[in-house]
Image (cartoon, rainbow, N blue to C red; front, side):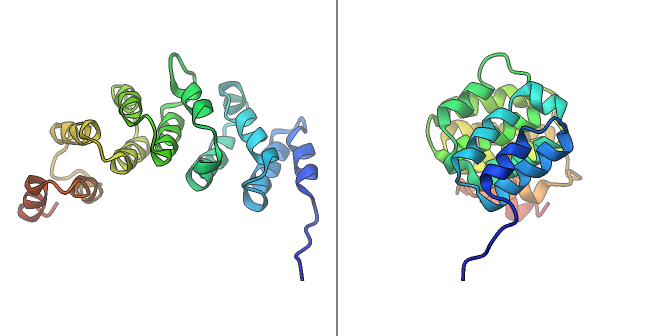
Length: 186
């Protein structure tokens, strides 16, 4: 027996056009939950990820980050690159999530590392930093590894996410990092 829903994806699309931001956010979250691979969901992702929309509906960024994390393969890489290249008004945290989605797609890895370097050159919070190192773990390139090693100078032994960082470093399977990890268990 097929499950029946109270609203269709077309209904949710209509709610996404509502003038109330709370209704828009609710409808978009329902699209992500019930119809993640729908063209309608993709259409509203492209609409809501725009800087002016993210400023208007601050909480929407969390729904979009969830969609990027869970459905990255459904989003066009050129569209994502367009969001983070050049002068952008998207927050560093959102840029990091977009770049992680691009890393998962696996193309233009060198370009992704360069864009990650641009974000890291700014003052970022710990959540953004963690998304950056997750993207670097996915990339597995010499440039990504060099960026990870560059972070060493920024850490002290009381860095709260040292274990996460070391696990990402070990994923590159460099003998010196593995030895360092066993000598210095965080």
